[in-house]
Length: 107
Length: 124
Image 1 (cartoon, each protein chain N blue to C red):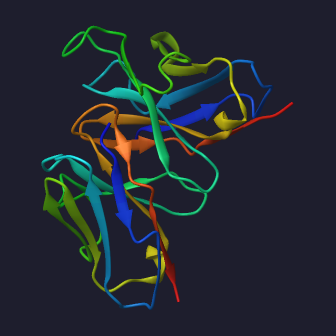
Image 2 (tube, rainbow over the protein chains, first blue to last red):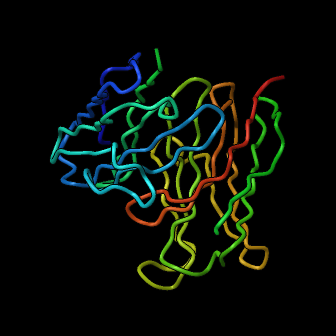
């Protein structure tokens, strides 16, 4: 099983600030790493697929990068509506696995 | 617009069987190269993929299922094409199975449509 480890677990950020979340895989997943946003009492929503491809309708302030075992999700200019928990997900091999999540709070 | 909705009991007794159904609307559960999935989330925790089922005669045989190893012996995912539904049964539940259960459509490589989640509590 591929284990995904995110850091940090929690981040409190001022609006307009830049947010960086990392996801490290226990073995290479190539580009098969995706990011989801989950707001309280909602289901997760895809924001980035294949490490760096923005999903349709996602604001351009969200971007992703990385390959292999190290990946980054960046939010350039945090907005209040971005308060959520962010999860990475690998589809490289079964079982499908998710990171433990990074909660982003607005100061 | 594809929509998914979970239904089932919110309370299950320990050692009993958890049964949930996901009703799909806006598309046929037999169309497309999709995997119909169950994912759970323990309170305040991350996401755990349970498994999915493939419902076409294409890449795999219709009805092919895949499960996470830790739940494979207790979980069964099935499809009722006539009702456009798929289901999860989880046998011999314990308090550790208390979670929000999501159904989702997996269109490789992403889970693109999700239900809103169904809270299941295991308690006597």
